[in-house]
Image 1 (cartoon, rainbow, N blue to C red):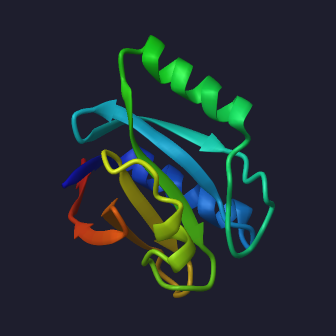
Image 2: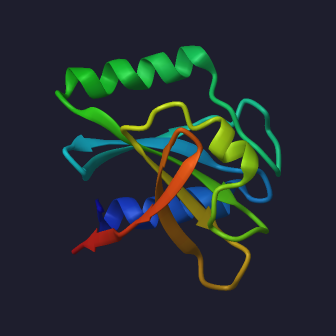
Length: 132
């Protein structure tokens, strides 16, 4: 289970809506499975169908989280017009089995956020708890 404070949860949705129709992306840093900081990232692909990070920006976020004694616990991205489930490309590019992969779907009126663990191409859905 991943735990996300309500303000971070809402910020993820806002980021996704602001960037639509481009896929929004970023990281959550935290302690254990609880998010403490949201890092909005630049979608280097500027694409409606996939995303990638700028390596320099990715390194800076890793460094900032480390300075706060946090670790990157989740990578998130939006699906502007498709459901909140990993695509074949998402699964193929899920290199870190220790983090959660969060997908925000804007396909319906109410955004849908789901989280997954992906290890060796196997996808397991995990619960998302929104902390008040």
